[in-house]
Length: 418
Length: 222
Image (cartoon, rainbow over all chains, first blue to last red; front, top):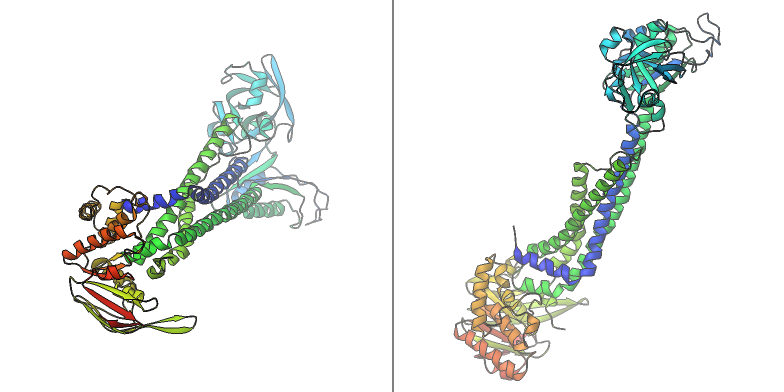
């Protein structure tokens, strides 16, 4: 209920000691401000790190590794696994946790560069076979035209998507490449689009220096019908990529007569492991941020409690008079609590707004100066509300002792003349 | 009528039990103006606190008009009864320094949850009655001692109490101002209010209808 008298009294108490009130409020302000900044910065770093996965948070890559370590089922050790497209088909059949199993080939072998020609311009780039499903979570964004689709793949069309760096080197600036032709290792391909890696990282330039063609086309046009370079496996929703990786390796070892204990016959990389490490790291950082900020906030709130104790001491006579005039314990306690809450809530709210404003400013600067490695610094609404609720509860707790002391003031002793 | 019968009060101080009031019997009629005198330690302040419901008694009986005040009166109930039935005037005025004369006078009605407009209306009338109709907006530090005490009297009257308890109301005033304040008390008395003044000044006591002399925790003479 709006009570002008009470607000006037609170205003009077707070304005009577402006410096003291200001410093007390600053403690609370700083606590919530730091909480917002730390959490926002943590979120920015976390998002930056997660963005580097470009959606590949649970993708498994498997390739043929070193020669076998053990003799097994009649095969001598030191044998290099000779796999082909059958391995992919076997996994598609037997690997229950997998949503997608695709093969990835590169023309001429892994990271081998090809001579690419367009009219009178040319360069050497990696030509990689790709799949329509891969585009969705590879962190590529088309900047012209489109990506490889299912029809391209199924019909083994001779179409190509250029990385932005490739486009820059073999086309005139501003020239529309879509519909034009390039020659990859002597075979003509029609350009259907240009992509750019959307993740700013040290690998961006390498990713943008590739030419992507349907892997089905690559295998048939360049005589790699049976050959596979590596496998890319995406688990079904809710299935752990680590488990799927274990199952896939076990199936591949069994299929190629490799000893189950062999650790080098197949190379593998699982983005989920790195992703989980990053998530764990930033969760830790997040917890640390809360710890530091709550500590600061606690100090601020204790400051409020201390100040309210002093306020009660100073107002002993006034409280005694109010009680003599009919004030109940409840009204005295209410007055003290309301005073403390005004300081904590107001200072906390200003801290929250200031923190969010700083985060917004950083977000603008990150975009303006195109600083890589960070996501937009922000805190979510729930976190902000949690922080405010915590603040108000802490403010209430910090005021309990002073309010109790105020309620216990004896009007007889309070009103005694010195 | 206010009546006290066999009121006893003990205090414990430094593990010593002090028997401050030793069976005080007293009755004050409605509309009476009495003064209580006594030397230091006679128990007059304790008696005033019990009369004003600021303190409880150990044994005896206390009746304030139709209301029986029990020995174990709760703090909340005492606050409510004080607010409704008793007006206080203190030696050092006890005005809130950050409130105007009008707001000080209106304060007891705030605890009766009476609206601001109604409070201020009644406060204005009372300030007018005590001769401070032009000073309603003045802050306490802009008023003389006599004016402050008149504000305090107006505050004591605002709840239309059964009894005004004044504790050395002229103790901090010069003789001319004392006369002014006593004139106000007498005017209030003429309206039918019961007034109890605790004083150590004989000339103040002489201006009341009856003097109650306390000695060693008992009424020595009336």
